[in-house]
Image (cartoon, rainbow, N blue to C red; front, side, top):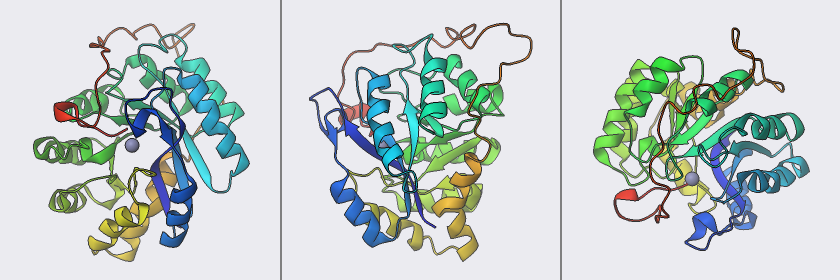
Amino acid sequence: MIIDCHCHAGTGDGLTGPWDTRAPLEQYMRRAARAGIDRTVLLAAFHSDYRQANREVARMVVSRPDRFYAFAFVHPERDRGRISSMVHEAVSRFGFVGIKVHRHDVRITREICEVARAFQLPVLYDVMGEISVCELLGQEYPDVNFIIPHLGSFADDWRAQLALIDHLVRHPNIYADTAGVRRFDVLDQAVKRAGARKILFGSDGPWLHPAVELVKIHALELSKAEERLILGENFLKLISSVRRQAVKPTGQSSGMTSRSAAIPALSTEIRDPWAGNQFACC
Ligand SMILES: [Zn+2]
């Protein structure tokens, strides 16, 4: 079974580019079917209200639960204090199996990590080349699994992607996806050094062609067993213990927000996530 762990879906409410405007799935579904992709993890487009965006994705998942998984997109600042309720709705009502956070919005917070821990959800966090956070995520949340898309940089920042390999090797809870990675030798090195257990196939559809992305995995010339890990088994393992209800951490009376201000957020100015130094995907 082939699972694409990274595909966008639904409508954004911006008008900057495809990433915050529209992620139509019709063509993606035809391409994925021809490529032999069996299941796809859907992520909302950039949006000013992720609860609304997640509900749109939820309608797709509920209509095709055999075909789609989904991660709940949350904004570390705008959704501060309500991350738990948003994730609870997404997981218990709609069957979502992970959390999506993007550095283009702001940096990830402890609140998000603690909610992920409470529901035992993996977090797909696009760090946009800010690899150093993996050290903190590895140390502070060893029991929460993080998927770092694009090997850490959609911009193909060689330094960032190379640095991520070290974190993949050293931290059992840090994983990476292959979406949009163009520096094939870095991907090859990541698999060789960190092992196929730490890499997940993702396409960044519908904006990237899933068959083109899939060819990269075959080009790694791995054993069938290693290929199966990357193409689906790693993902299934990461979602194997998702809880439908949060388990409160022991010693804390109420919630997930007590330390949520520990990592300060930076500017929320609107930037083009596909341009210049902020080149990222979504
Ligand atoms: Zn993306």
